[in-house]
Image 1 (cartoon, rainbow, N blue to C red):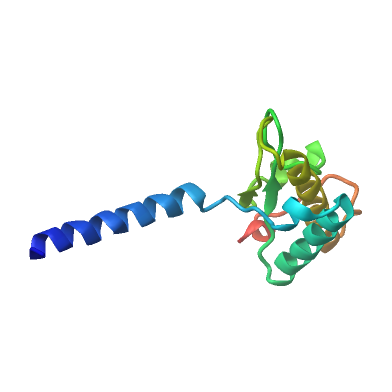
Image 2 (cartoon, one colour):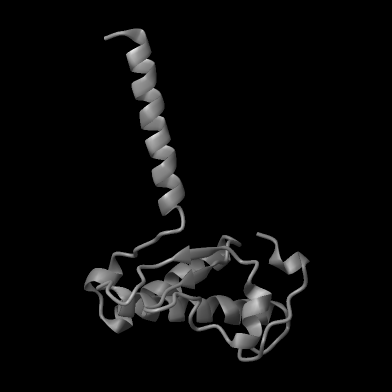
Length: 137
């Protein structure tokens, strides 16, 4: 094979890999969504949230049917949590895992919001008032 053809093929495959990485970088589908009960899904979400908190990498889970959003977060806290990175769960009114994703996101986000509220001396059920330093990723 010609040397230039190999170069073009390698560059093309690299471009495809980058494109796939950009498109799917925020997408996440826990396997428990496919087979788990609501209780299993909540338990998996809580475990993932606790692991993310332990590694000092809290995020917000985004899910929904008509409009995906970070479910389980008090409206007063959303603006203050806006700097947290997010990950997208399967969403959309026609997606077969949308309801399970909402269950997962709700449980995950409640743990994250509650832990951050406690870290900042607030009751977990009150809106968060985070400082700029606490929003660092």
